[in-house]
Image (tube, rainbow, N blue to C red; front, side, top):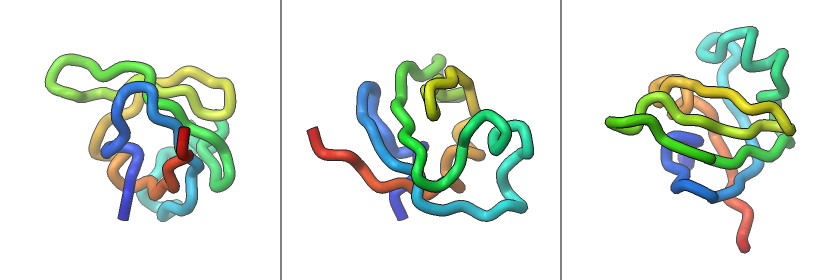
Length: 76
């Protein structure tokens, strides 16, 4: 499984799937839903947290949470 945690800076992907039990409701409200685009903007020191753009919203999430969100990479 490829997850948000495996993205490199600048890479784009589409959210495919995740377990509702492992994702905070706040992320769902901010657009972290299947079919939405995600871009990794920055990584904090030691790579945690990750600073992302999801569906036009900028947010930071822990790498542990990011590893539970399955993605499909966008070429280009």
